[in-house]
Image (cartoon, rainbow, N blue to C red; front, top):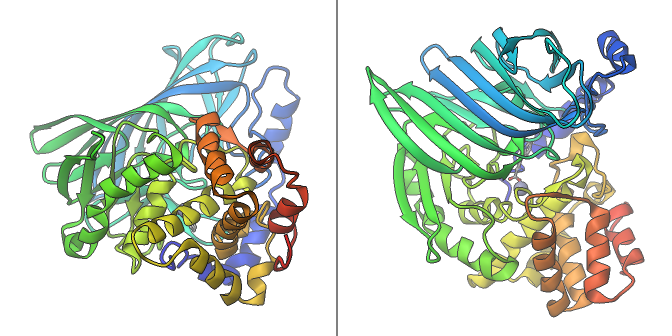
Length: 470
Ligand code: TRP
Ligand code: ZN
């Protein structure tokens, strides 16, 4: 568990610096655009990341085709974004922090564009009426960036000694493709990644083809279930590939850095059983493939629940627990995603509680024991975070994970096992492939239990301080 939160320990030091960069005031360009009549908004209004996502359209599909040479760290890419206008648009933004753009078209016609921070501001040759499907093609080349977050952690396109470790939570996706970078706009994805022969590019979903010509191999990956941009990856390196299936027939594709095969073997071997246990506990696995990417990018310090196939930057000391955590996110976080980043405990608290359930299921510490340990063990500062809205710097801090998990265990005690597991199953069913809020969870819990849980959730989620009665 310490692994994915290795980063959190370093957060306090960088927090003060980070706070100043949070106080972004809208730039002059954004102000001008806001007043223009039919311009799409430069953000979706998520207070944690003001410019994340965009207004005026909904992306349906990304086709991301690129070559990448680990030796030069350069990428050469063409991304096609297919979207539907949700208002009349004479101008709209995509989020993009990648290298230089050489060409941009909308519906096949060259379009005007300018860049302002993470905003790629596009002026199509003719207006897009509300309801119109349109395609944006963006060609770009250069070195994609590493992105530093308000908490000091790194993400985006992180070069490794044999390729690149590619992660996007909460704001790294625009490092390598232009898009609508907010979890509320899910889309399907196709990736065509060309890398030097002998190197593997591992994306989300199913591997459609792998073809080699003149020393380069192109991997085509297809992700047919809706996916948030932050969960996309095409991680590149030298990998040992293993393909198999779970007991229920879900294809497994696992890529492991040869240096880490031994140390990760126990965790990788449990993937089918973990998936199977969660299927029985939470309901059907939401995607059509699974697996893992065990890479070596030690400067990253956390794993990510990239859709269908979580990615690890190393083998953590608690490798099995971390695998159970990342696979649980496929239900909690990937299929059911947050509506606002302030709801992040719905991801991390639920994945941590799933880790507790897996521990108990496999004869390790019981959920009750893990609850007692977390409740007793943590320092005073641990209890000073409001986990229903931890703030951007503390999104991935320990309380979001552990107090989040404790909240679920306390809820289970309050409503009883039958209602509790009904709540979890209803949650993943009702919001499958969608977005939900803490308020949605409270409403569902009250409905399934028939209880008034206002003060229960108030104590656990909205108040600071260690809960004593609930
Ligand atoms: N969501 C990841 C997990 O819990 C952790 C994570 C993603 C993270 N991005 C981060 C942790 C940035 C710290 C900083 O598995
Ligand atoms: Zn997590």
